[in-house]
Length: 141
Image 1 (tube, one colour):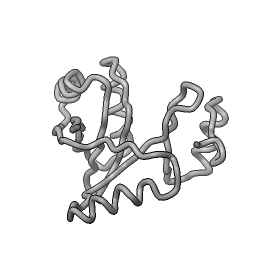
Image 2: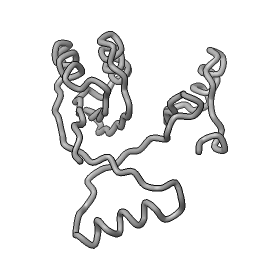
Image 3: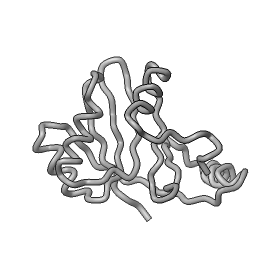
Image 4: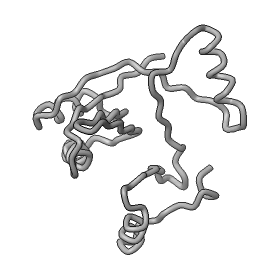
């Protein structure tokens, strides 16, 4: 089954991702999965959201350039080799993967977001001081 992904094209600048998240938050739209790719000048934020049509409208109304793309959501068992088996099947059919991103199932009713920041120590201190819960590698199942 195919599903629609939203791609938002943005300047590579501080706050660009926050702006997208803010537009969606103000429209009552939940981000289910997100991937960010960048070059020196621009980035592409790929999103799976709970209300796609509303998200497209809200982003466009706020002057953002968006595109829809068909994607597959592959579910594999949580065990070593499961992803390898799926990729082997695709390779045998000469299917090449252009890009991929993933997310972990919710833990205790909370979503997990993996972040890479330019200053990890500063990000850690900031989030901890604001009371956000940070998970250890062992807590991510």
